[in-house]
Length: 138
Image 1 (cartoon, one colour):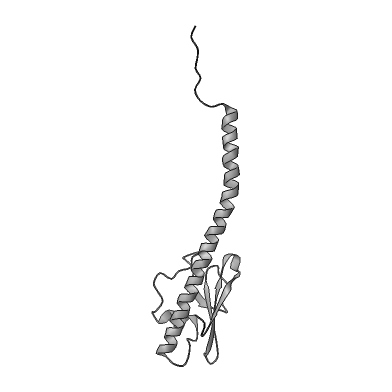
Image 2: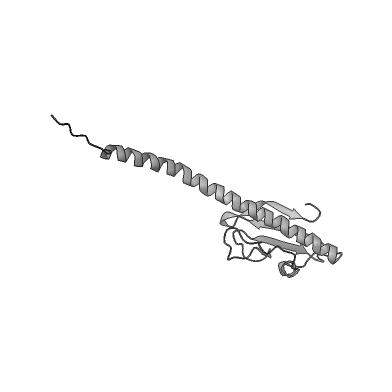
């Protein structure tokens, strides 16, 4: 008498594996998205510090005033060439405070007569980050 040996998996076993993979994906994907957003916001904070160093360098070269706007900072040529918006590299990385908020942008604002400045960053969903840089505080 010959026995027939069946190889493979039953439909039930395959369905159980698919359900388990679905549960793992449902847990992992939202956490992955949060981690990616946090890393992008960390890049915005790094960009803020870079802009602050360029602003302070400008004051050393042009005492006693800080740059009057973001265009002046860009035109100094001291910003690194890889300074880009982490949320969307095709958007600007630096702009004036009065411009429309864009995810990942660093905003620069100065008070007349350009003796004080504020640097803020915009995170996911165009919300301001919890870090604000002002003159004299590195």
